[in-house]
Length: 176
Image (cartoon, rainbow, N blue to C red; front, top):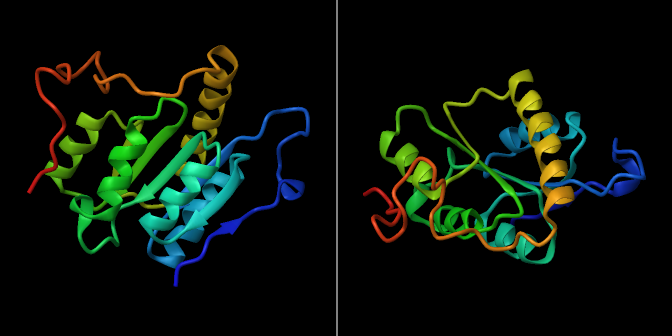
């Protein structure tokens, strides 16, 4: 059975005067989940972790998240399964940044992720200092977004509208 791990705010590296910045890390592989979580923690995020999409979905519904890191590498059914459904659901939220980590060389998956408008798609990610730096940038961006427009709850039907056709022209589709 999958379980989630929440890092208590008392142990957060954030100063108490700042609003919490909460990151959800979803990865089926325990070691990878720990490395992704360590990178987010190093950047100052409060952390919630879990192994599977159904639990992540429940967490996302009851927690105000600013960053979600989904690792698609160990998911048996890839983006066509539960993590794909979760990704599509989260991609419609304007109040968070979505990062997808995936196996390298999967062009169809990268196109799918970009059509959804994810913040970052990281194929073949080797978890290291670079991810901690990206998590730091995500934290700075999340702070700016939350302070500038607190009512951003629904993503427009045109994900990444500056680069992709509108939803009426083409809707994001899952590759085979």
